[in-house]
Image (cartoon, rainbow, N blue to C red; front, side, top):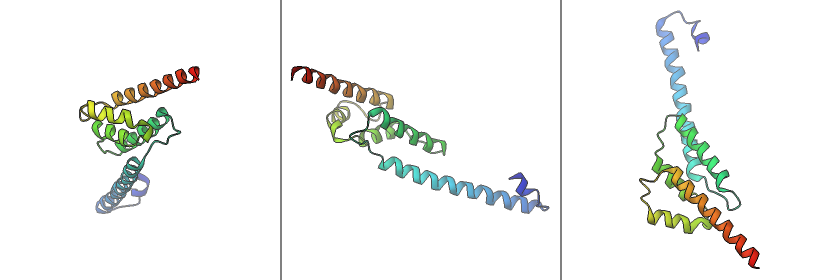
Amino acid sequence: MVLQMESYTDPMQVWDGMKTWYLGLDQVRTTQLATLKRELESLRMKEVETVDVFLTKLSDLASKVRSLGYELEEVDLVKRLLDSMPKSFLQIMASIEQCFELDLMLFGEVVGRLKAYVECIKRTEKVEDTQA
């Protein structure tokens, strides 16, 4: 920016150049934020995806949104996570929504409950395999 402004001799030219520079940056930031918000809203966990892989995607998007200055509340992230889960998680999602105050629940707490559910399912499948 300094290199672009060094050719200006009039302070008004410098001021106008700076306004244009930062206005452009604000527009880019606004556009990037809108794109990331859409990605966040459309993000869904696939049936074949592990919880950890999906959480990485969700966390990365949330970090990018926050880095652009948007305040992403914990409750919004919790609701986004629960809304993004596949049908195979319907039982645990319903349990979490019915038994806990989502507005007070931390993202890490929901993640822990989802991972515990996955472990429970794995344990049940192992028992069924040994009995078959």
